[in-house]
Image 1 (cartoon, rainbow, N blue to C red):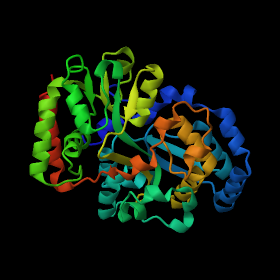
Image 2: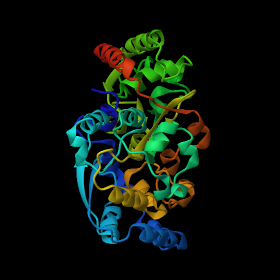
Image 3: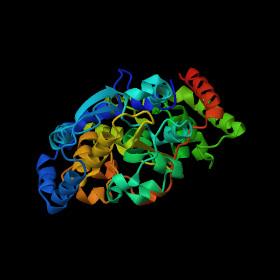
Length: 381
């Protein structure tokens, strides 16, 4: 399995976005979102959008993660613009890269890669540079853009983002989890060993040991990577499963500590009130899913219309409530209705965001990283 397949897929094939919809009922805040949509801010945004893209018609071929938009947003987009959307389900960044790098790349007008693949796709001339004059950049958080490379920001626009951390049951684990070393130490405790889960993502699993040692998860130093792999290989005997999306185990107590995204942690915490979530020190991973236009796209006007529409504040609020991850809207936390459960878990605090690192795929060592990861998994109990 590749670096991002596991982050995207559960054992039964569901993606992060699909999984997040399990909590859609709890996240639904129709009254609050409707009130915002009636506000002057939203009316002004809709008016701006209409001037830019109303009734342009045509077709948009969208290649995206399944269930990644509020249904009303998609329906309203078609009603407002007359554009018919043909959606293809994206299952991994590797698949996306392969298709863009083949004649099949001409089949799509808009794609949603994760930021750590955008740079490679841009270098291979598989994406168009974004015309920022056609995008409402005032609705994209500058602090988030600052975490990304200039190349990523030239060729893509952030849709939503997240991180990984540790969710744990303090009554079973004892003490507190503040650092990645705390996680490693706690996993060896009697009563915890064998009830621990790791992410099924190579760079994240190696990242735990690298971060604990004060190293960057973006290192290309093979000695550092090997040492990290040795630490995680020794830790693997305590691991029950490599599964970033298991809330069932966390809910019933068969798992008492796991490395997950904040969206997964939030769903688990609603099922088991004893659980806590932390983004451990000193660093963790930042992932950002991006809007990008393929170099072979036929319907670029429709692609820009979609980006414009989905970046409008009311639309971003609806998507955030639906998928359970923060979108790129500045000040999102103050705009999302107060009755959304566990809002503090959805949103990454500024101090935590400052220490997150956007992962970079290094093609020259990617095979080695996945080889080390296979070694770690083989050592699991």
